[in-house]
Image (tube, rainbow, N blue to C red; front, top):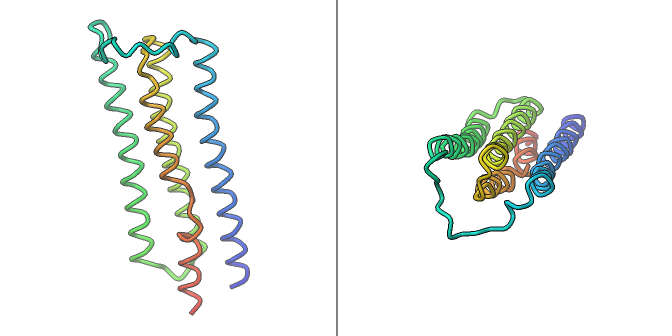
Length: 158
């Protein structure tokens, strides 16, 4: 039992470290845009959301961003539901599964941010920050929660 709690603790710390690295990378990508294309940060909200020349590609990027964000939320809900309902005796296996799902979901949120990066660099699109806001929101929602890992190990110990 002690060994399982020790392993669960280190899985949680690893999840936090990976989550933090991906979270910080999103802000670093904002800095890259700021230094490479600083004029995009002069927001002019009188411009339309879509221009005629790149509207189809921007719609495709928008849909892809929303899809990746939505998939990350759905996968999280499915994983938590399965872990709560099935509860195999091996809590270490549950912790590893939850860690993998969390990291994958964070990668999907990073993909949402990358679609904003593409829109900023390829199309000089001033509303690129909407993808960044969506990706950062997803990362906040996917912050690893200790109780998701530990509750299972305590329930199986009694």
